[in-house]
Amino acid sequence: MLLHPQLIAFLEVVKQGTVHEAAEKLFLTQTAVTQRIKQLEEKLQISLFIRSRKGMALTAEGEVLRQYCQNALKLTEETLATLHHQLYGQFITLTLSGGPIVTG
Image (cartoon, rainbow, N blue to C red):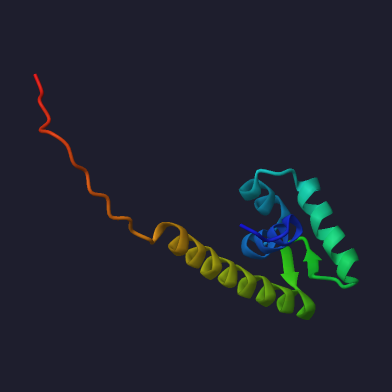
């Protein structure tokens, strides 16, 4: 995935609903995920989540960022598929010549 680690953490918290579950899915500590979210919020100067004991819900700004990330992921997938096709989708014709193969 080509998204910034802060955005990956953000998306996983959105998907899982809690920092704890997101951390497990990302193989990170809760502290690491929390720090990434905090850094992202500071960088953007907005709150992305409404935090409660039940989990985390997106603010209106968080929803806008979620949509942006989803679009970025889709564009990344399309771009990688195009690059892959250009790299591996070309066929090369080889003609081999020589004598018969003798075995045994």
